[in-house]
Length: 259
Length: 378
Image: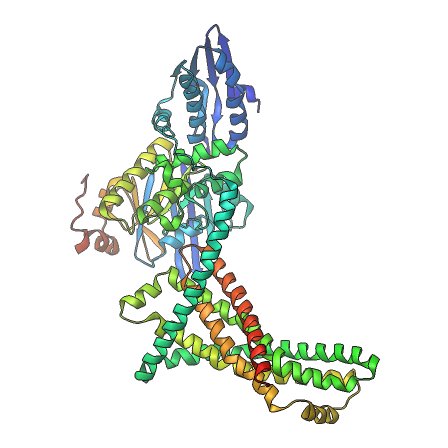
């Protein structure tokens, strides 16, 4: 879309994040290209979510630079971060839907806060988003506590997409879904990415979705990106942790598409 | 930016040719909505509409939907609509948007406002009986739990009981002492100020003593405990309910009443009389200080008069009420906590209800006790 602004949607350079004396992200650099789906893998508790939350400004960093769509990111309260916030949508692991609002109001919330538009149009947009994520208009009147796990994820995705962001951050989008629902969700992400021209940054452990939807996969170990590239390149990687991750017992089911 | 460049409408005979241009995105939504509403009269006049999208530089769902709406309006009025010049990268989006909003959800049936009001009143009446049922159920299950504990004393959660006692008893002492001290001082000051007109300052001691020991000490402390510990109970049990912790307990074959609620209620029943006692002492102390510094009545005289004015009966009347009030607070707090549903809002609502209801019931109970003690001559 905007080639002039550079070919990268997210640029992270020399990032250090830690809590007290415990360093979680150690001089990490990562570039995400515009229009790609990047999958991030890493050990549980290894700092994947920390990296994502640092990029969106929720966790303060010790040093390093982060740029999202050309805007430098400060903390969550920083003005430039808040301006950039209009350009990204975030799908939290548990959905993080506002429990006192209906599904429709949840989707309309970012619209209502950021834009001036009529209620009719807002309803139409909300219904459009609902249908785009594969739900029916009647679901709009439900409350988050009445939704199943898969539906919660879909509604959360619809809310993340409400403002038509350029980048979507997904924190373990398929965790807690059965393989069929997870497959459908993967297909949905892939379709939406194509139709809306999204850049997707996805933290996941789901080997199937890494294999089917991700253009590139980045492996995070010891606070650094130890390998990055298309899935078949990662499968060839010599790094011990990456080998253990992709060639462990649980990975035997993985049948690489292109290798 | 010139709004003209976003949409140009050229009518030629029966055909209306629309040329959207520039960025049809969320950023321009206010202008775009006004524009697409603005061309409606022209749209109604012409027999056919042609949308030429060659000039569109940027497009997102919102813009695509507004354009789709224009052609839908035309087709629904029986006109012909045609969209040309779609850039390849937006073809998928346009196709997607064509599918949405096809089916309007059935509108919620409108209800007679009068009927709604009447049904609300009916519901709250039914709700009141339900409240009573819930209260009695909790009382009953607590009783059963106590019977269970008496049969198997080792099933009493002693650690939890001690911890709750520490929280609702020991940790509450400073604030209880402070507030009752101030209340005692204020009563004494007001009494001295007004009694002085009749030369009856010395009766202030009677007033402070009887009022504090019989009524105020226990009432103020009970209200504070309801606000401080009752709300904490409701919020704790409510969030445990939300996170399915209570269900987890039940599936392990444990009774949540016995594990969670019994120690809390017993802790309250033990703590409230002690707190009332400490609170009453603090109030008397406050009253005595004011009588000394403001009323000029020395401590020795104050204590001597207090001996004449109050008897152990007054103290008994006050302290007997405390465990019952504690029971009411505990039952209300715990049963409201278990009524929390999935949302954060419901947790807040139930906590408010718990505090309001337990304060109300404490005052009602105090009134009933007043009638009872009057009739037995205490």
